Image (tube, rainbow, N blue to C red; front, side, top):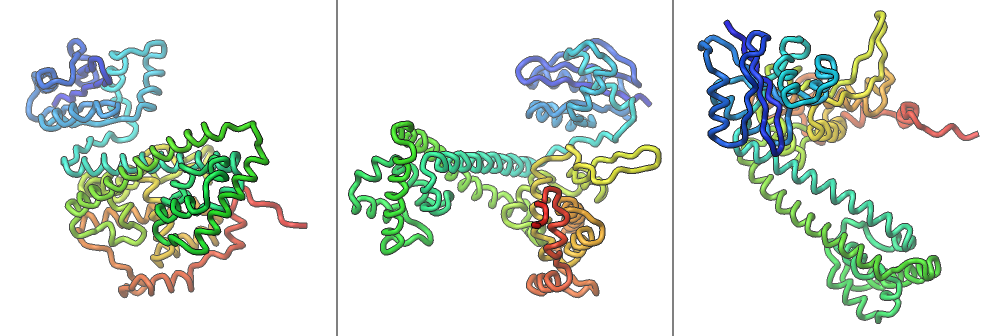
Length: 445
């Protein structure tokens, strides 16, 4: 039986390069192809050329952008096993095999040679269903917009702190519509001090929302605060700051923020509809710690539990395990979490674990034991909880039944009952938390 491997070096704009190896030996000339049906069909025909049904064919590539996706699903549809490997792994092997050459052909040959060097198993790439793939992209886009919004809010806060320090205490939270509108229009001290009070009162009434009153003492106090902050900013900077240009800069930043906030709101609606379609039983949401926001993110990355052959396999995919360092029979504890795994799934699982350990007695016990008896710090203990949470995700998705909170005797619990058990039995003392912090302040004399 022939074992054929095909190393494919992907390009963003130019030609892709593939090299076929049969039983570890190069076969034929390199294949150059592009992202068009005729070229991809030619690659598929070459991939299975002169092989029997019992022969194994495996294509190996790096996850270069989304260039891998059309090639992968064409090969998978033709019965070719496709695997993706990290660029770091290819770079390290290239350095060993071809130290002084970095070419498309060299990379294709390195990729094709990887299975012959043993090491970690190459898992077949999972081609998600179209709707599941859409959920993955939409949750990723939402995450990117939310990161942009967080960065923009930090920039605004930095500007306020140096340009008009007193304004930070005057305005409500920067996430509110009123605060953003006030910054967009009234950061310039001269504009605030020259405008009549009724105009400011009308502006605040038009932009107040949520719990902010439209009139009364709150509005009057806000006007007084804006004017006091403006006077202090003028006294602080004098002529050294062009507040008119700063106002224009902040207004543009807030315009972009508002656009992205509207985009996130629209994305939330589409994501919710897709998630309800893909998980009609809300299986993931039945697990404590995984709510409306995190469930679509987790499902969008994992897609289905059937792609994993065990809980350990899913945990490895998520990458929530520390590096290992041992020599001479001695293992060094406290290693950092590996850089493997999808960053979004790791972040989602850690956030879910931090909530779950406050609700679920079993997870709370694990966290409590690691913190109080094993000497772990918060993130180490949380990583262990996240791994247990991953096991539950695997089990729930495999069985197709919602998760049920239970006590040690197997009796079902309500969320309130579970929280009461956690508070009573598994609360980590503040003194223990303080002792686990790496950069804690020295005790007072």
